[in-house]
Length: 340
Image (cartoon, rainbow, N blue to C red):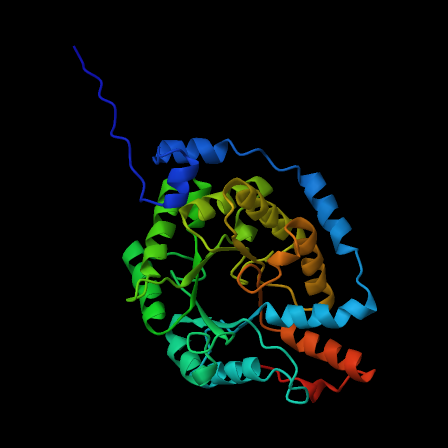
C-alpha cells in the first residue's frame, strides 16, 4: 500500500499587510488564489478613460501652479553606464538651483542615481540633503541588479544595504519579471519583503521602497494590476511603472490602472501608497496630463512628493522653458537650460 504524502505548505516571509488582507493564511497557495481572484481589467474602458483624462485642459491661471507642481514631483535622474561623480555633482547642482534666473523655482523631490553614486550625491547636496534639512532633496538609488534584476537574492540585498548605508533615502528596486510571469508569486513576494528589510537603517527607520514593475514586459493590464497588488502586499511604499530601459515605459493607461490600485488599497486599508511613472515623459504637456489623471483618480491630496513622482531626466528642462515663457512672454534660447 502506497501512502501519499502532501508536500509541506511553503510559508512566505512575514509581511503585516499581507497577513491582514489574506487573513493570516500567508502561503504560496493563498497568495496565488488571492492574486488570481482579482477581477480582470476592461482594457477598452481603461484606455478610453485615460484618453479622456488626457484631453482635459487647465486654465492659464492654473498653469503656473501646475508647472511648479511638476518640478516638485520630479526624481531628477541619471542612470547611464557612463555616469561619473562629476555628472552626479552636476545633476545635484541642477536640482538645487533649477533656474538661476528665478530663485522662486521649486526644487525636484529627489535625485536618482546608481547605488555607487550615492556618496557623491549626498556629499554634493550637503546641508540641502533631506536627511539633514526638512524639505530638502532626497537621494534615490536604483538597486537589486537594476534594470534586469538578474542576480541572486544575496547580491540584491547587498546592493540595497550598501546604498542605504551610503545615505540613500529611497530605494528603487526591480521585481523578478521572469518569476512573476511564470506564476511564482511567492518568490517575488519574498524578495520584496527581504529588500524592504534591507532598507532598514541602524536607527530602526527605513528608506522608502519603490518597486519597479517594468510594465513594458508584463504584457497585459491584468498582469500590471496583479503585480501592483503583489508589490503593495509585500511592503512597497511606491509602485513604479518602469526602469526607463524598456519600451514602452510609462503610459497614461498603465499609470491610471496603478492609481486605481492604490485608490482601492486606500479604501480597503486606509493606507496611502505612492505611484511613480518613469520613462518617456519629456514634455510639460504630457506631465500635466498625469497631474489631471492623479487628481481625478485618487484626489489632489496625492499630488505630493511622498505619494507621486515622475522619473525623468529631460522633463525638467521643458518645464523650465515653459515657466520662462509664462513669466516673460517669450521662449528663451536653447542655452537657457543645461543639458545635464
